[in-house]
Image (cartoon, rainbow, N blue to C red; front, side, top):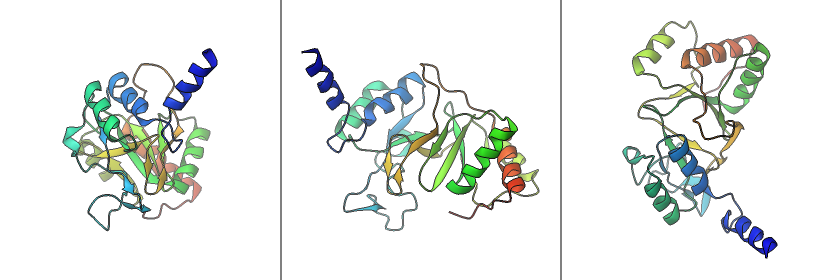
Length: 221
């Protein structure tokens, strides 16, 4: 009987397509870490590279809010359960800024080179979210004024760096977007406390310096 129950638990933790259950991850983000989340629009089931939203030119297929809108993001467990009970394959979208982390993202290949350089330099990094095309380094919340002053002081900032701040969003693991699976390149340490994240200044300084030192360009993507 114990073996049967254990098998049943494993089956319940997966959808019919075998992917890990999203609702558990969404509840961890919302209730344990106090990160406001909401379900994103899924990729078009007929063509995974296209988005399920009405925009035929969508640049983030299957990885952005649509219905509900971004302002609906919440940490309420009942709402999170209701959303993913009704839309079990919906991507998990984090509303960045406020009390939640922000992020700095760049194309995947230069991001991998930059992280290797940062590791050699001994810089402490927080969680890193990876998709097939871009990696996102989570950072502490920042204001637009703070970001503007930081970038203004730079001689060079790669044009493909993107900043997910107040009013922004980011798809979180284990979402499946039109570009492929969203995963942790650097997973948060297990536990109930919200993961530690560095200041945005440290990350931008280190990423720009790493890209410059390694000679790796960051193309627009």
